[in-house]
Length: 613
Ligand code: F6R
Image 1 (cartoon, rainbow, N blue to C red):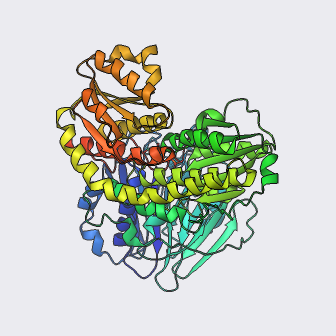
Image 2: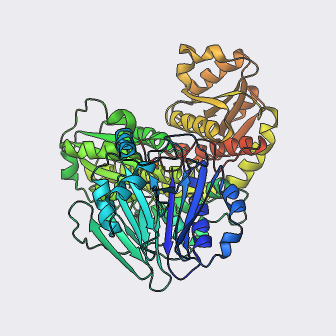
Image 3: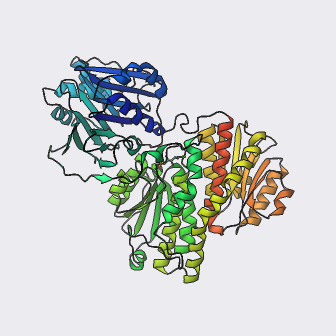
């Protein structure tokens, strides 16, 4: 969602902000803006659409000798994505500007009150009320005015504020929307919605917590509580990611690069957590004993989108091996249903970003009800990791493509490790089984690494006959069912083809009516426990002339009696199929989307980090 970048320091501000905004593009946005202070005057540029539109307007400004400013990419919520609605927004004097991420829920009444006091509004946004509200409280102390203004605000915000009359200072504030500060010894102070914007300049970051405010100058920062005004001591964290990790490295798209990074992401996620000889798993971050686990009656897995699909796979694994009943919930549903949760329930949230508003609300609720909360997350220091009782990090590295790929397979790996860990602690699997499953997960990254180019080549040829289809079905059974859902989600988000995922056995209960010779159906048919059943379902599709594409096990010649469009996958341990079969599903979506000329890294209407409800 919206991206904020702020900088004050010795560097020229415009290139720093543009570079930061470019690195936040993955969050999704539909207009952009920048403001900087030059000769005591604020200079502001805004544009609809992509950053390139903004850049064409500010060519000369790149060299402006300005050293303090703010930038913003806006994902429209209140008001269309027009230039007038793009941030920064100004107060009546034009001397004060605000950039904002989040939603001001009581903006309508605030706007009416401010209008009655004579404030003049120039946009339809909720954000503009903040500029006027701060103006209303402004005498000569900007931090004080921000603190007073936000007392009237209901909703979520990450804010950056600049006032021409306080030319050395940026003010940042946060409530339920992410904001991170970058600090350094000699190149100034930064604020941003996410870490990649800071990486070219500094690895030292401070995560603002809810209801905290920061006052930044080129060589200092002070963080206070928005409510009490008291100074808060914060820890500076060192981020191991580097700027190059957030570059395309010769790949045409971030998504393709991230698909190819999966073997490494899997290896990193396993690293140091599993004994290759015994399969024994250690996860010091959660450290439950068998006795602790005996007191757990049920696990709730809570997530959104792709992360929810990872949860669906994990249900099969955990119930099979750790023998703990698992409920899987979409976070936006979880938070509003009557939950039967108490201290005998463990809640595990799964989130690439650690900032997804619904998932965050879900874990807060679960905690209130007495549940222990663990999060599986890829972003160090993100809100979810700070609020959970324990975090199991996936080590996928920064994921920039909006469609999640390597973060998903890394989540699967983390969930499989947790399954093994629970099963070993509860002694629901034998030592031999631990060795077998440990071997299976340790081998999967090499298998994927070896197969990726072949799978991509084969798929890029295969899609020629159906890349322009209007609809698509993905089907699978058992562990392949969530991967069918994931394949359909990937395809619809990056190619805009209408796609649905179904459990194969469910087809005859309705969706089979859709099947005719024009309907491509990708069926995942690994030789697993439900193979024969899957083949029967595929035969039902064939009998109705559906255009089948089969992803199956190498050596399964029977598939050739069904269709010519087959991608064979190496035989791996049955429990590893969801990880392996994700690869062709991702590549099929990628190849179709690029063939259709879509913007795969930044698909329309989507945001990488969904920080509003
Ligand atoms: C799809 C995708 C989304 C996210 C969802 C949850 O490719 O990326 O469906 O999975 O928005 O995001 P996180 O995992 O950050 O909570």
